[in-house]
Image (cartoon, rainbow, N blue to C red; front, side):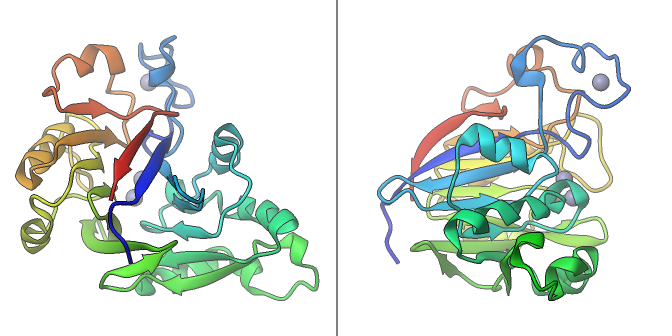
Length: 264
Ligand SMILES: [Zn+2]
Ligand SMILES: [Zn+2]
Ligand SMILES: [Zn+2]
């Protein structure tokens, strides 16, 4: 495994579970003209700059349009954070990659969530006699220790999220974590000072029973000594322009289509 690999990261979606605008809502953010207030469900695309190999984290209900916008034609690896609908219900759209690439996609998911995932998408784990009707995937257990995907060392972290745990991922000096209430102390000690750029969820300002808030996520970036932080999984409580003004200079709200480069 190598370090000093340049990655291109694209925010495929920066919204909370409903997306923004939220169906039926007429609030100022949901009716705003600012494209940065239009948020599809949270997901990112990571591309190795040297060989164009891709990783997607989560297949959201908006996956198809996110992938078409990002012009991705080849995908061999998906890392799942957890099995909430907003993170995996675009799973069926993985089918199309097989039509052109004829390569099954490795889908990494924490072991304890496999039964639920297989029950939810049982058709994909049944022989239908024709490969076009089901996503062609290899469901793999996300190890509890560093592992390798497209030649990158991936350091997983387990995070409390209501009745389940989500998994976050660190690729050298870049990390992505979403859907967590708090960051465990012993993981904090492991990751502190190692991360240059990090994306983490922070749903809103008001306290949330299963999610970190904007202020808690800002504090986490400070505790981890992150140089550049992006807050994602945003609800319609966040107006990008209005609320960006109150963020520390090294922290920004993520928005759909945002791209940047990081070195592992
Ligand atoms: Zn979510
Ligand atoms: Zn709204
Ligand atoms: Zn969740």
